[in-house]
Amino acid sequence: MAEPATCCSGLRRMVLGRGYREAVFLAMADLRLAAWFLWMTPLLAALSSWREALSISSLAALASPESAAERNLRTEVFNADRTAALR
View (tube, rainbow, N blue to C red):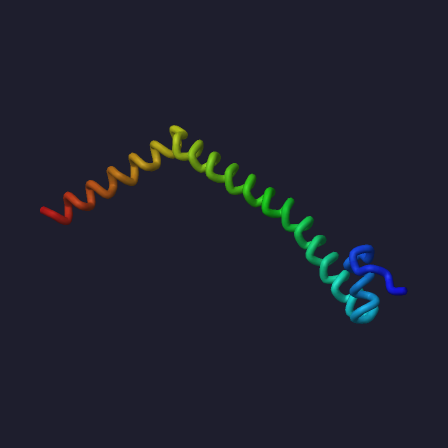
């Protein structure tokens, strides 16, 4: 008498129905996907943290007195050049 289909696991049915090689190939693909996901998650988190740290440091650099002095010098030179060009 045959076993009911509900008692068999999906992998066992696959092994019995389609062949061992195909079942192993599909299981390896699932493992590769799981490994890729576990590898990508920390990478994406690190990239996100890096991007946030970069934006915070850029804002801090823009607020520094050295940056303001540089901006003022460039503005002064630009205004002098524009004034000279319009005379």
